[in-house]
Image 1 (tube, rainbow, N blue to C red):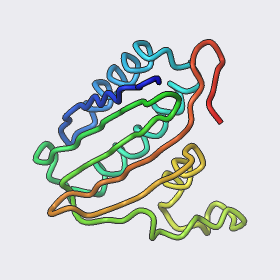
Image 2: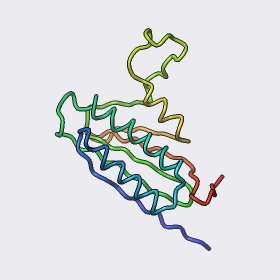
Image 3: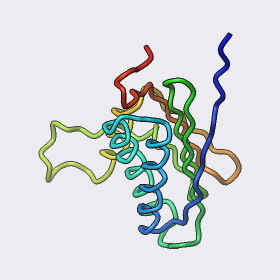
Image 4: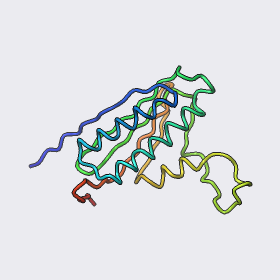
Length: 151
């Protein structure tokens, strides 16, 4: 019988653009320690970059530095769980309709592309509002640097 321990690592961030550098270091170190392939690390960066940029831009209505954001990663076998928690205004990104990519660029409303990118990069995504916190939980099966992936 093989028991696989689940390790969850988290990083607390402020709601400002400088948090992206810390988040990049966190993702890079997690990927290195767990042997994630470079393309998996790049996907993680895109996902967290989109989520952080959106919450910093829209979640705090201009109150830079007053919020708290937490990014967490855990890996069990080849199943990666990403959590993104913030205390910004209540917003369920899963209720946002996907952007109409058939419209000419100048006719498209602003917004929606970031969450569409995130959705395309994960296998599953869920949202809850817990007290005064938005909580996104995202999952994906990942490949390791050696090229193995679970089905």
